Every structure is written in C-alpha cells, then in structure tokens.
Length: 321
Image 1 (cartoon, one colour):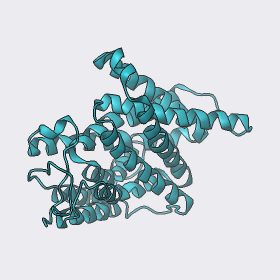
Image 2 (cartoon, rainbow, N blue to C red):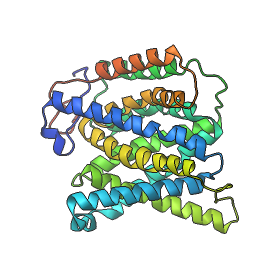
Image 3 (tube, one colour):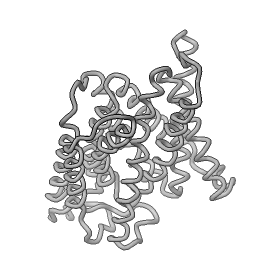
C-alpha cells in the first residue's frame, strides 16, 4: 500500500500532465480563495444595515445573472437549456445556498476573520469525503500537509482577540462542510458540464433557497429589508459580495476542484483568514507578522501534501488498498 495520496481523474483536465494540472489547479484555487475572501470585508459593511436573508438573496441574484450570461455567451443557449438542471439545482440548494447563508450568520455572530478561520477545517472534510468516495488513500504526505495547513491557519490568526465561538463556530463549521460536499458533488455528478455550467446551475440552486427564505421571512413579518437607504458605497460592496466573491470565485473554485480534487483544493481555504486580514488592512486594520508566517506554513503544507506521480485510472478496490 502506497503512503502517498492519489486521486482519480475527474473531468476533461484528467488528461493533462500531472505537473501542469497541479500548477494550474493551485493557481486557480489561490485565485478562488482571494476572490472569495473579498466577500468577508464587504459583508462587514453590508451587515450593518442588511438582514442576512435579503443580503443572501441579493448576492445570489447578482451571481446567478452574471454566470448565466457568461455561460450562454460562451456555450450557447441550447447548452444551457439541455443542462441537468434538476441535479444541479439540488446540489446548489442544499450545498451552496445553505452554506452561503450559514457563513453569513457565522460572521454576524463572530467576525470576518474568525468565520474565515473556522473554514480551515475544509481540507480534513475534503479528505474524508474523497476517502468515502474511494478517490483517495490516507497517506503520510497528505496527513502532514493537512496538519501544516491547519497549523498555519492558527498561526496566521494567533494575534486576534475577542473571537466569539459557540453558535457562530457551529454555523461556520456546518457551512464549510456543506460547501466542501457541494464542491465535490458538482464535479462528480455534473461531469459533462463546463466549470461555467456547473457554477451556473449550482448558484441558481442556492438562489432558489435564498428566495424561499426571503419570502418566508417577509410572510412571517420578520426583518427582511435594509434598515437604511442603499447608497453608492453599499452598491459597490454588494457587487463585490455577489459578482467577485460568488460568481468569479465559484468559477475558479470548481475549475480547481476538477484538477486537484476537493481535498487538495481545500487546503487553500487555510489562507482565507490571511487574505481577509490583508483586505482589512486596506480598511485601516494593522499588520501582524504571524499572519505572514502562518501563510508560509500553509503554502508549505500545500506543497507537501501533493503527490506528482501518476493518478489511479480506476476506483480503489480491496486489492489495490
């Protein structure tokens, strides 16, 4: 039994040379996490006056509109109409929609960096998912890399104080679990769709959930409209929150998962707290050296965990294990 992690190929990129696929996949994952992290500072501004349900709905309306237009222009209306919408909507509804709402609630209960830090559990969750699916063997390099990325995430935020846990931590943990599952399911269950298509159908699934939650809140008399007039600055933050942090991030992320698998791609979520703190720096926060050191440890973990030897061509069986 080999002690290195091995993944099954998934999707068109499986035919690419291992080194090329790994380099491209890591670049896509890093870009996805940078764009995803931009949503946390934007949410800090918007949550001051926007209730979570309408904020989620507005975010996904922007993202769904943008990705549908991009998908239709790139691949044609007929491709959009023939897509497996039912399956994609279900993945988006239970995975990306629910996780997006929970991460907003986690940020309400804690803060931007703490919510991002709790997402450091993603590599462990992704590894478990792939092992359950027979896509990965638990190897020494993968275990060491996972440990390094989690440690790096902790180091990067070691200077923080006042972090509130409890329900906020539980919401963030549930969010990243659902998000990781949905990322794997989107690639595995929608193999004939491009990354644009996978992103579009799953984001639309999330929008269905957000719309239902907003309508239900309004019918029950709950708070669902912004408590103050929406100005130009809020609109800028909303564009970042919807188009950059969801549409662009989702497109990059699913492309990365296709190349690396959800476990290795998820290692990059450990850098999200660092990216959030960098972005918060532009909003007046101070710089902390542990952030840079933690980021370096995470990067080392990503490198250690990856095995560049040829992937398995068939699912793992008892004789292979």
